[in-house]
Image (cartoon, rainbow, N blue to C red; front, side, top):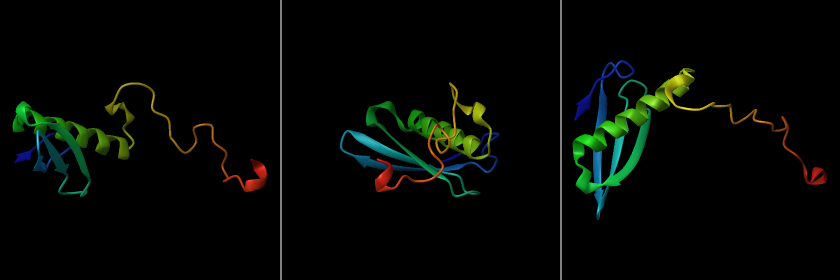
Length: 93
């Protein structure tokens, strides 16, 4: 299946891997080769699971491009979130 959006002008490639009562759905951007995966209940249906995977892919692409308005809440950079710049040695503990 192929889905298009403003973030994904060339669409997204969707893959389904069934595992018992659940299914793993992967969405891949054919331009950047960025891939995300979700796991959902098989009974939900392929259309709904595909849309959720595409939403997650769009969110990841927006974050990587620096557009942090893709989600809710205040997102801070995990590297500079109150941590020391250098790695502590055993003597610092």
